[in-house]
Length: 239
Ligand SMILES: [Mg+2]
Image (cartoon, rainbow, N blue to C red):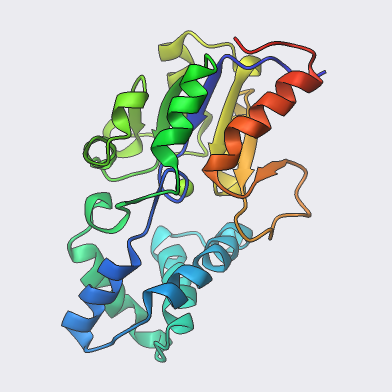
């Protein structure tokens, strides 16, 4: 029987906030004269994410993951030279920070957090980030709905290492089996959260993860409905 959840923990990048493809496009135009269609990039992003997630075992370095991720996105918008993807990444990440690139809130992100809180769930973010995710969530008006934000750069541990999930469980005084984690990468978010004894939901916007043995939703706005149906299945009311 599924548990009655009391806590919902969320990923940030590609869960609550997305890449700002207009900004990506502007940076690449300024640096390389390349004008990529933001809509084409956005359309390719779920596939890029899927490639990196799927091939995680074969990509030992983050640098390689970013190259694959952005090659999938940029080539969909007409970028032709795979060998120059590292140059594009240097230009994009010269300003990175999550602040500059992952700065577009997911559809109905704030409303969804309010809905979850109104249902009685405690909310917090656990993010693999660069130290700037909390400020960015604040700037987008999302932080006010969260108890706290854990940033891997600040705590020195990255998902899928269970210790970052344990840290959140301890801080919230939450029981793992009554905690739900939501993120967009199977091998980082789902495997990591399960390692700490939590339930997990995978964000799967393009329906590419049907073969996975895990709960999936298309977007964050689907989460309250998903949690409620899980509660119902357990014959439990909300917290
Ligand atoms: Mg993510």
